[in-house]
Length: 162
Image (tube, rainbow, N blue to C red; front, side, top):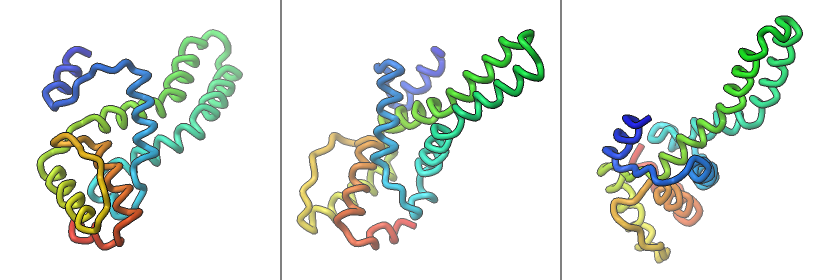
């Protein structure tokens, strides 16, 4: 765990938040990210958000059904293994939200930061007011900007980057 924290610190992600805060940030980030098909080739967020939402909807019930079937076939002798499997399946959506929470706080790489600046300049040229963002910005800032850009700009602003 310590080496994982060090590697995230080297990437610029400071792990100051407790687990619950990171999970909540990931859930908020999944709601803020624009679910547009054109972004699939550029960012992995659409796939992670889709898989996490499907997992949140179906895996807890599937875990209970699997546990009931295993309990009926294997009996109480395998109860620790059954409970371990149940917890693992039920926790998969939390892993997606955790990844999204860490990703939302990650600073943008230089190429995406330049793209962020270009889109914000386009929006300001069209008279759209934006909140100031500290440099280089994070993926959460990018999600909010893209969401606003999709609402207020024409759909061709993304075409030059594909």
